[in-house]
Amino acid sequence: MTTDTFLTDFHEVAQIGATPNNGVDRQAATAEDRETREWFRAFAKERGWELRVDGIGNQLALIELRPGSPYVLLGSHLDSQPLGGRFDGAYGVIAGLHAADRIARRVAADAAEGGAAPQFNLAVVNWFNEEGGRFAPSIMGSSVFAGLMNEDEMLDVRDLRGVSVREALGEIGYLGTDERPEIAAYAEIHIEQGRILEREGIAIGAVDRSWYTQKLDIEVLGEQSHTGATLMSDRHDALLGAAKVIQRVHEVTDLFEPETLVSSVGQMTLEPNSPIVVARRVHLVADLRADDREVVLRARDQILADIREIEAEHGLVINARDFDVRDNQHYPEQGLELADQVALDLGLGSRRIRTMAGHDSVAMNRIAPTVMLFIPSVDGVSHCEREFSRDEDMVAGVEMLAEVGWRLVHGALASDADAADPVPAHAFA
Image (cartoon, rainbow, N blue to C red; front, side, top):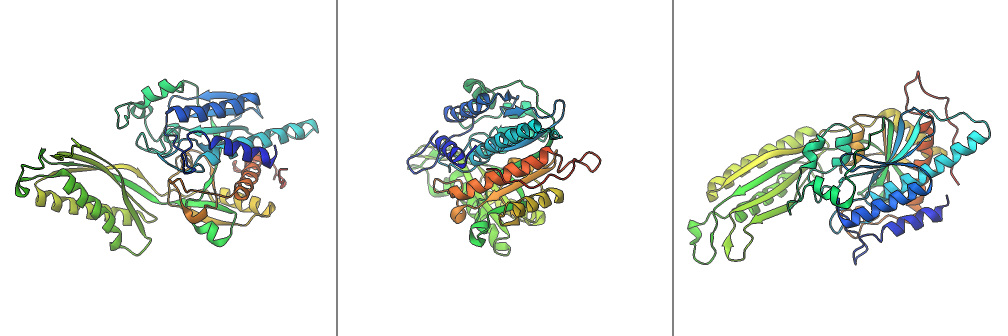
């Protein structure tokens, strides 16, 4: 397929759930999410690929290249944050579909000339609820697929309106029952969501590790009372306590060297949420991330100590529990070397890079050899309507993913006993 076809498809999908400021709003299991899924389905059906939807709503397109063999899986996610960017996740899925189409065509051409069959089959995935904006935790579909989260527990998770994952997937027709394929390897391409590649003028980042991540689920309990009739000294204001918790979450980064730790509170709900009632309950989620696990744990302990002080000062009860803890993940050296070599063969500049953000590849790396690739992000902006990557960078990434996928289906990350002969470099037209 041509470069123009990929770009046409990418910009077409960007119109689904489009916002006035060039972003998208396609939260998991919404009508807009369903529309992107139907687009994925049509792309695969047009090419005669097998379609599956598993029990957590992961959508897969399977291409049989070697009957009975496991699958090399390419993909990312089509869901977005509220008022998010049009590149995050969607680029990786659409790139995966186009890379898979190129690989399938090339395999057919090789077979017509008497070439050897690939060692593995090929598939493309649209993971469910990677973003976690509607249903927490994030990276849900791939984590269930990898056996890191329990499917029934995740299906029972509810959004802020009380709708469960099970109900939402059923409503859009994507609560599946299909069998999950056996995976030989996984490759994902994504925008960097950082400034390194753009700043250094490098086309491809090969991700070597992920940061340690953990969240704190925090519930602040006070007493509901009249804002006009309750003396200040008699108040037990849950919102005031929550505000001080948020401030401490932000300030904890000052205890470490600059850029060592990032922290935030991105979601908060309060009850009863009335303009004339002192809040009785606030729920919030704090997010802590660093390359060094010990840094995160030290920050967590400091926040818990701060919480005890805020409780005593304002007569509150504050419950905090660990939530969505993700260890550092190191991607296999063999996959990094593969990415380095492919980039060199295609004439693309590349470098090793870490990911501060979580991705589906972090889950998949637990169960299969995984290659994670980045392309540049303009200004490093993400989870924002201003998120942007240039067409030429996206196109280079598709070429990169197609060649990586080609070598993977020929056993590039298989064990030495099973690996196929080295596959020659090839730039897809």
